[in-house]
Length: 315
Image (tube, rainbow, N blue to C red):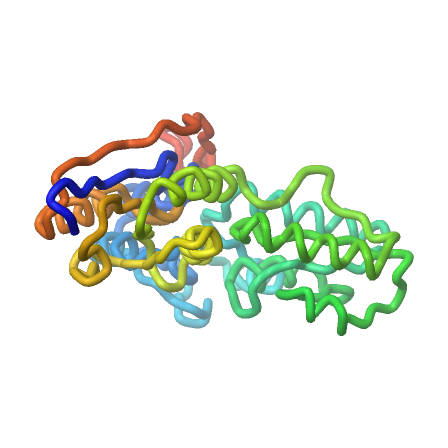
C-alpha cells in the first residue's frame, strides 16, 4: 500500500443485539449452573466466539442425543424446528432459548400464515440453521427458494393461498429481487407486515454501501459460515470493489493491499470488535498510517435475557 494509506472503518459493524444476547445467555447459564452447558449448533457463526465459550465450559453439539439426561441445553441464535424443541422437552432437558427475537418473529409469522391455510415460501440459504429452523415450524406446506431460478421452478398446491418470509441475514438487494419474482409469478402472494431482514443486517449492508465507494479494497471480518458476513462481502463486490472475508488478522494477505490508498474494514454481526482491532493492527504493520471511522447509525436495540437467567429468578 502507499505511504499515506488510510484504513476506513464502517459504522455500524460487528455485534448486534441478538448476538450480544445469545453470548450472554451462554455465559450466564455457565455462571448459574456450572459447566458443562450444552449448546445445539454454534451459538453464533464465529470461530473466535465459539472457542472462547468452549474454553469456559460450553459443549457444542449438533444433535440433542449428544446431551446427557438431565443436562442443560441452549438453542443457538439461529433458532430450531418444532421437532427439536419437542425432543428437548420430551427428554426433560433444562432449556434456555437463545434464538434471536427477530428470528422468533419469523417463526410466529409462519405459524399465523399456516393457521390461515396458506403455504409458505421461505427465501433463504439451503442448509443454513436459520432456514432449517424456520422451515421446521410446520410439518408441511413449506418451500425454500434461494434464487430467482428456484422461483421459476416452484410448484405449489394453491397459488391463491401463498405467503412468503425471508431469512433474517440475506442481502437486501437479493431478497428484493426474489420477492419481485415471487410476486410476478404468484400475484396473490402475501408477505409479512414488516420486512424480515433484521435491522442489523440492513444497517451493516447500508454501511458497506457507504464505505465501498470510498475505498480501493474492502476487508470483512467474519467466519466463512456466517451468512451476514458473506453478504457484506458480496455487497462490496457488487459495487465493483475487491473484497475479502477473513476470520483472523493473519489471514490478511499483503498483496490484497499493495499499492492501495484506502482500505475499508467492516465486520459481520457475529464478529467481535477485538478481531477488527487485530485486523487494523495487521494493516498498520503492512504500512497503513491513518485510521478513520465513518459516521453511521447508532444502534440502541437491546433484547432482554430469559427471566430464568436474570438475577433473582433462579432456574
